[in-house]
Length: 528
Image 1: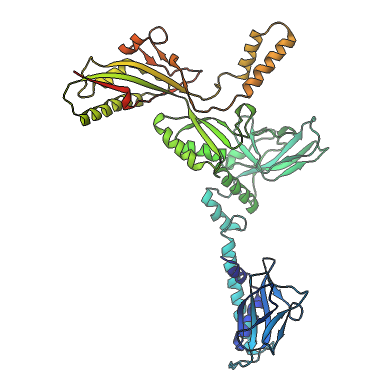
Image 2 (image 1 turned 30 degrees about the vertical axis):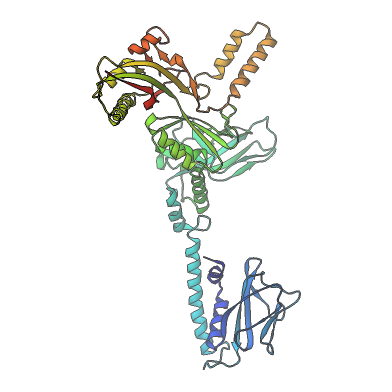
């Protein structure tokens, strides 16, 4: 739809009738002329007896200009002259002129009120005006902000949102002021509340403000979508929990029980919920990134973003996601996050992975061509990869089983496989969840003296350092201690004999995944 067709759709009944009457008597309807601020006079295409009306665009809106106020018609020059001080069309826009020809061949000339010509024209005009309004309503019914009733139901269905019927419980919740907070406190529409044991969830139906000096305010609520019917009916005093604390509100409760509503959700509330759903799936939001991870059957363990808590805050323009996912799906997961993130946002995806690189020496029969050696190299690495892929979270990669996997490859001599070295790295995933602020404080107390001042300073420094921890970078941190032998870190002899394993269980109190990082250059083939 462009500006011209939009003006046509908005045309009122009287304007349509005027156009019909002008056309019936042989006049010209809506002759387009381009307006230029540098020109005052505009000739008409055909000789005109009289100008009936001029319409156009003024300040980006449809406008009907007045004769002898905004413009005049010079019959000698057969042109339109715009008046000084009158209204004019916007520069470089079209204006439209209706006028009567000097010589008309139409047999219909009587357009006075009550004439047959006018009566028929008005009847046709009325039908056309109704059609224009229906077209306009069809156009408006396609948009979230203007659709109504059944049309709105169809629009929001794209988002999977359904209008709540009268089967959803409604009621009121009282929000009580925190005595230490002075000033107005706004409670947003859609604020989520719950019963003590979360048997039912509710949302506020309106936005309300607790004014300065008010102790409490009552706000209407409605049961959430998952709690239709009897599930949303709770006793008085059951709703006591705010999902997200609001500064200035000390507590909430429902003084009366909730009950099933007498009418369904209105259009305004449905629009609000639909827009909230749109924001949750918008690109670059934490909710949209979390949704992508769920769709890929992974688990979002932690998130660092600029609006997070102090110990989970990332620099502006960045977000870091710690996920629990199998190594095989990590590449796909990272691709989906890159596709979802907003332009200009740096999204870092990290997981608890331990990468290890074994240096393997194998013996084969002589006489194998270069192409055959290359294929054998690929088969050996594939055999090791198959073994590692079969490991789960927390499972160690055992050297003896790696040697057996290589010996199963056709062309490799059994008993002639040796692992010469193993390098290991773990990804930087930030501070462990298991080490809470309480643990940090206890460590500070144990390391401090009995001096209370020194003890306070030690605790302040410890807590501040913990809370200001930077988000994980996902970079590899070399860690040879992950390669364990029979009595500690594996020796060279234990590694060569396969009497070692790459540990992945309970590292920083979490289970990790082992990931093979091996190229053809890490394999030494010896012909016998």
